[in-house]
Amino acid sequence: MTGRDALLQAFDRLFDAAAKKLNVVCSDEERADAKADFARRFGTALEMAKRIDVPELPADVVSAMESAIAQISPAELAGVLASIPLARQTQEMLRVLAYREAEQKLLEHFALQAEARYGGN
Image (cartoon, rainbow, N blue to C red; front, side):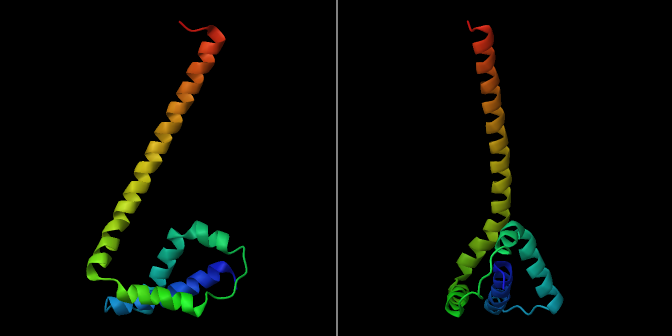
């Protein structure tokens, strides 16, 4: 089994644990949509994991993850849900900041080249 397959298999178990925690019943279609959404969000990591062969994730590891889901408090859950859109916005802000930083470094580089070539004041 590839690492990708192992992660997607673990997702199924963890999805069930999360649905149970939330007292939510999902149709097969909703479950498939959630899995596809997970695969899109973590596509790069899953593609990399596809390159390695691993046994399925150890049952005790997945059980520990299921236990963590079962023990999450309503306040912690609300915090996780609130952080999702903020994480996306923060990622976009960091992207803009990195672009500006690169732009500034490029301008400084050109200024130093011009000063070296044509002399400064």
